[in-house]
Length: 465
Image (cartoon, rainbow, N blue to C red; front, side, top):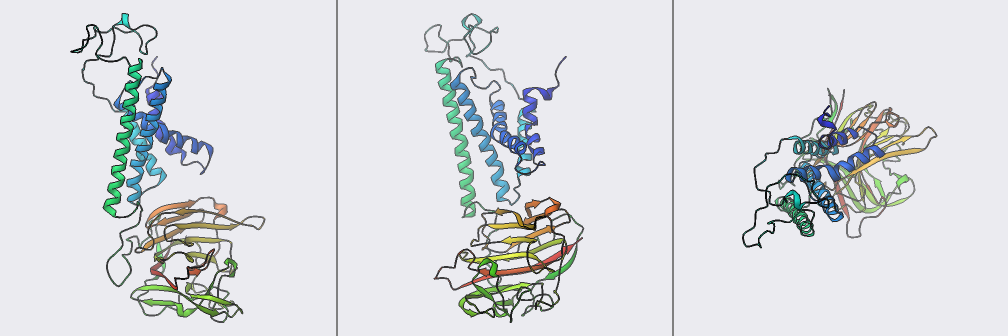
């Protein structure tokens, strides 16, 4: 009785990628998920390529042959993974599941598609009487070995794969193929660098258009599954901030100003540091002594906006429970000492946790932090997060978004999902206020040569189901 094709070694190899893809449904960081994914990425695409190129691959009966074949398999697998991942990343479409799906399809095709065979001489086959029990091939019927022109009579024209010279040839072939693959990969990466003129990042090209900074990303509508209806929008088309939608301090405002003392920040937020013109909201940070109404002196003035209250006992302008939150943002060109943030804070308690950080840029304009804070049953602050980058967030506008559902929270950068939390016990379920601010001095002070910084916002929108 014949075995089904899928339980043969080739069948298992063909299904390996789909098993790794299915493993992405397991909890992140789980040992089974890590083992299946790593085993597939390191071995299977390369072995499929090797089988396709050489159906009876390499001398495996000797240790040098096994080592050379294993090294070649890993090199081919790594190169294939990179050649799939880099274009996806450059196109802003990279996800682990998408890369695994492409590699799984490639591996299956390489293994299962019929290989076209040509009738060619096989000069390495010795006659049965010359191939004893010590050879690397089983005994089989074979035609007499043809003589190579110019060689002594009776000497074979090729080396037996298991012979010392055959092993040397296999190693040289493996080394040559590895070098060729690496050269191909280097050429592809160099082409990407040359064509874009900057490192491999997922950011759009900066705009040379004067006036507005950069070009807005096209994803000004929700990319998460709907249906949606818009409940809040500001395109900053006027010349002043819309006071019916925004205030310029946290709920703990004191005498027209405030700060976030819990972070040890160096700014005192002032309404005069918020500007609206040419369809852009600009939050200005400026060096200069500020005498806060809390009795302290601050070395910087800066700007922020919130949909919260203009006094501690006041009524919030807008609060939101669940929804899709998005903004087109351009962060400061000088990142050191500055902390731009786009986030959600509870309305009732006027403090955190819980907290949803849609995008934070602590002392960087290359990396974006996405965080979720929640309160544990014993009252402690717990959080989970992820960093995305590098990308040129100071060049042009980038759409930063968050989909807050009852049982999950998903982050998007320029319309591409970058992080998701799917544990309902961690997801907030309270009304929250929207905040955009430019903090100063978190973890480090700005350099002495820097006296100003600006955070630009082109639009803000909120949608709900």
